[in-house]
Length: 517
Ligand code: FSO
Ligand code: SF4
Image (cartoon, rainbow, N blue to C red; front, side, top):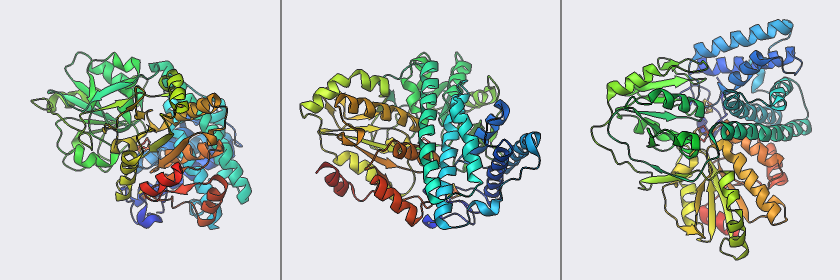
């Protein structure tokens, strides 16, 4: 096996014996074969979309290979069969890409090709979340085939860079599509305080990014005496008007994905994984793990896809386990008893006047977007310290699961606005981009001239597609950590650093000083 797609890759180089994430060689090899079969399908379709069934396979095939999503080689092999059957319908002579070539060759070309592939995996997750809400953008769908076909071809470094920039723009369209899918189905998020206390009685914990799964579960638990708690990237659901209609959606349990083995260990409740990030379940709670959609783990109970999923086994499990006998007061990482979320684009734009006045009056000196994924490495304390040390006249926008390091901190307000504003899940980077563009318009300057700095934490492939979008938009001076992707070769990294002023993070003090001087 070879895999270097995430931030925790072995030795900062690549997992070759078994994944640090627990991915077995057989699964890794099957995932490579699946990727190569998808390239074969794109070859057979000559880089064009060929209909809803193949489109759905392309999205799911790419999504399945994202870090911490699917550990079940049988399911991956089944997808390979389906992809090959689709290909054969079109052109049985079209060859799959050779798995042995996927990660081999000139290091810079491997780096550029991998960056495109990994970004496409991230975009597939967003496209799939939109697709379950019946939203499709033909430009996005078509690009999956174009990109897959390109992955199987030879290109110069220049051409690969051109493809990466083109992809970044298409991913912006994909995030816009998901934003439209979510806001048209569930309304615009509103600032919402979310409790971290778990009330007594049966409950279910839902994690991942798929809001439709949460909605269907809330409908099916209605009147059953079972409460529902969000976890990880599901937290922003509380802010959508549609989800506020369910009084049994009580609060948020736990923190970011990498703490799940500790947090799920002894809770008297089942857990539903709707997307990533699934870690190898410990035996003490593996019988309480339910997966759905592309998420799978051998032995875990899987809830199959259908227009309306049947969550009865999960609900029965919650009733059987019964929850805690008394309310359990839990806290965030810094001891806070609740967290705020719901500062998506609509809310922030609705107070744009206040924000602009505060900047003009000098009350707000700088905005930071401190966001991205969390992870287990110690270097990630950087982000907590960065937020704690940021001067009082600065505002912190945040999103994705990295925020759990500081979202329960009370760092005060400016002009009636909290200094930490959670914009939502990682795909709500779209909201952040919209706000930045609106601020640039208001100040009649470019986004790069705003008093705004992006300080990103990356872990898996959705962060890759977002970064490519930011670069394709010409956003410079991004700080990135906790370490640099293993798939960026020294030459490719140099290009990104010189072209986009990309900065690897150093220390919070140092970086704050450089940014604010
Ligand atoms: Fe985190 Fe996992 Fe949303 Fe990622 S839960 S690490 S970027 O999947 O997708 O932020
Ligand atoms: Fe290693 Fe990350 Fe790949 Fe898992 S996903 S095998 S940890 S590089």
